[in-house]
Image 1 (tube, rainbow, N blue to C red):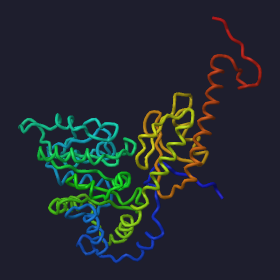
Image 2 (image 1 turned 90 degrees about the horizontal axis):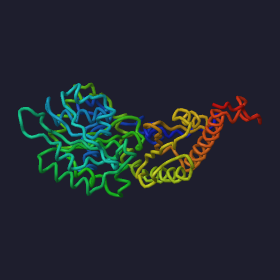
Image 3 (image 1 turned 45 degrees about the vertical axis):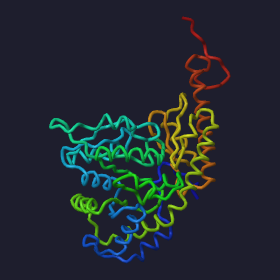
Image 4 (image 1 turned 60 degrees about the vertical axis):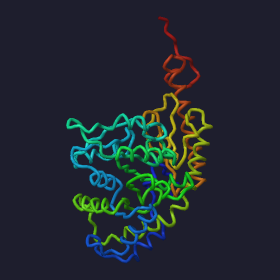
Length: 378
């Protein structure tokens, strides 16, 4: 048998649980375009209640959830305030501009994922015929490109106060918002109450195979429903999607702290490896970012070396690597991953020393055959 691969590239790689597969097979279904799928309706009611919102809608993906929310909030020619590291801005193909005529006003994210309120204050456009109308603030929680950062409840309260003072709605890309709730040890509604609308994924750490939810005021969700249809997201017997989604909300949300503990364990182990740079204090949820110290070992060589050790991670910027824990990753997998990183870095260091010695003529092309290379005087 081939050795087990520990795949830490993303929590999008999770497989549905056995209970989810059984629920999919047995789910009562109907035509959801007619709002007649009982399982979808139950999921939507459950999601709205959990978030403390009037209504919720099932959409196929988080990207569609964010896009339909933005389009429901904004008219053509409007402008949204969004972080420069936000998933909405970096990874969603410019959909709001391409399909909705909505402009992105980009604000640098703080390292903890926040959009600083003074920066938001400066970014809000005056009411003027020459300016795009500032119509929405978009935030992300947890923040993927900021290393799974969790927005504090105090920040969210301050943001809501500012947004209300300017008459602006706030939309949260909460793809991993249940990870934020687990990290803060609060009910999810304590986070959602600070925003007007929210999108969250049923997949990723919650392990459903497909689906995201958009929640907010009832009239807003009616607009989202229309945009979902226009974008091709109307579904028929979608109860087979909704059934594992309900288990994601009732069961999988309760175990996310295990993923966080494994992420912390990984960060602690990596911090002890010479050649790895990581700030353990920045690991708050299930995402771990670390940096390869300067060496001859390239990012690609590091990742290939890891793969040969049956561990997979991904590059997340220059010299930066990302690892994400999830329900299919055990404590033993984490310890094996730490050992694999240490081995690859050590191999890279040894190769780098040999390469450097060869470069300055201290070794022959035989790489350590005991014969010093000739050194030419210049």
